[in-house]
Length: 370
Image 1: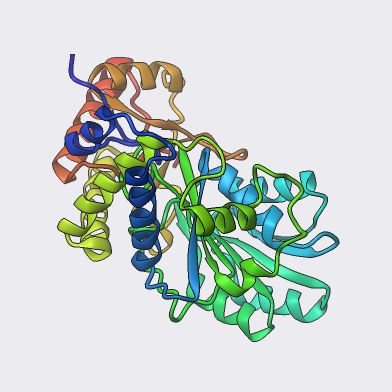
Image 2: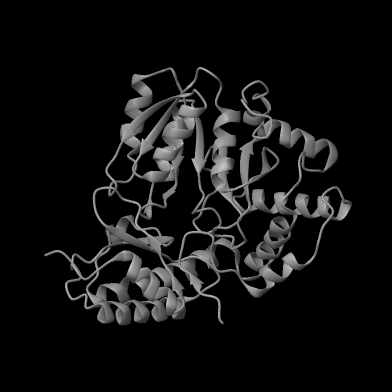
């Protein structure tokens, strides 16, 4: 049986070469694996044009582990963090800060409203005690793209630290550490680099990381300790996800061979265009206007027809070879379709045909609100 295509924001469909890289077992303290880790870390910094003033700290676990580790390591106890909130992953940052006993100052935005640099500027002006801004670059709950470059300039002008959740943008959307100043940029292996899930990583400004010696509440989540140990020994402190890192090495090699970030963005944009135009031709509506839509994941309004049921819709589309994603909004009923992974626009058109067949089978005729 052919594996279904994952039209999700990660895990996602990977190439045969990436899968094959996991067929070898690695010794976690072996010199060959240490060299593999070092090469991956160098490339991860280079992808965002980081230089000697930036370092990469990998961490076992999902991307959320890396987000928590970055917040817990870089934000001192008693500090305040401004969180522009326009979606579920912003809210997750707020929740993490609560667990860390760091004060979160929430700057509410609508789910169809990008984070506003002017409002961030006003909030930082009004409260000198805010030490950091935690910004989600692409909010995966909706697919909205926040204006990172403008926000980074605003934060830098105030002399505050910027922590960026770039989970679903790193590797596909342009991020240049030479012009975008951040203390930490966080991503994961199973997203736009098209590796497999199991590790996150933080690209940190070296000077920002080096002054965080007493911040972390946790040994396992202490990024400074992880980085210092790796610098000293070349090894991970605790058992590493060896197969995940080997797969990432293969995925990065393919990423470079395919043309790097510009080529990855071009393919994802073509996927997004094929998906959106196809779904709209069926009568389905996107949650976001095109100007705010990142080519990573697209949120569609669920059909208001009483014959529509997401669980049944999901099951039938899966039988045709495509795995979709449920909606993550509270106010309206939606579903999401990812544009990323080792797939092209031909796959997106096939997925649209599968959706059309399923909606007809289910007797769903009313596809959008008037």
